[in-house]
Image (cartoon, rainbow, N blue to C red; front, side, top):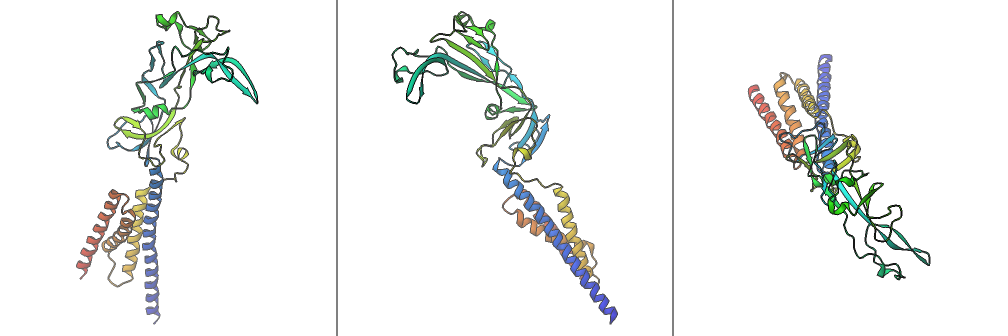
Length: 344
């Protein structure tokens, strides 16, 4: 009686532990899948899962269409050029600003007065409350304009126009009057960081013009964008309506996208462990039965249980991953069927 009771308790223990191990394997693969699916769902809002290429990144096979993070200082291969003033600068974007010394109307409460100041757009004196004696010129002799570099690269990737214009920062550059074309050299002279038409730059007069230039500084950037051949471009299908990020410095992905959950690590290892746990549980369940200690049958049952659950979780989301789990399910089914037939 005691022997039978001991055997019964041993069988019960094996069944309980085996069932718990099977459930642990299924739970582990489900938890890993949910964590990965949640990460990919949030990443898709920003264009997709980001591959961290870091510094010295180069285009690689199979990366087309992927979102990547690269870090580096932009290299200007084809510098922008302002042909009107024959000014060239080693910068991704060069911007010309033009201002004219004009009358402007200033209102303080019910009081109105007029003063001369530098303004970057034309002020129509006909709209003044008292236009008499405050007439402005009718047009600018030259207009402001932006000049983009023909080619800018970060390591092995060329930057698309959207990313090029997103580079932050600006700084004034000092023009060289010696490089001016002859038709402008007679009209413009340098004063501080400007080219001016004033006869006395410190005492400008109505209608005088001053021109300045700003450039985007070259500095270490973190760029997140989509690979299109050897270019980085914006992901136009991103749910956030942007699909790219350009920030100064070496910025980690989780700092760029604070809503992004921490991606699961060692995914393959967790998946293998899940199958092994379920297989060990199946082996203990089989061991509770006489003459059923079959490691291969246990492996087949573990793979079958984990594969079915994982396939359902990935259904409709990632076809490649789902087919992988389906293949494991079929393997488990075939191995289980083969061992059961051999046991007859």
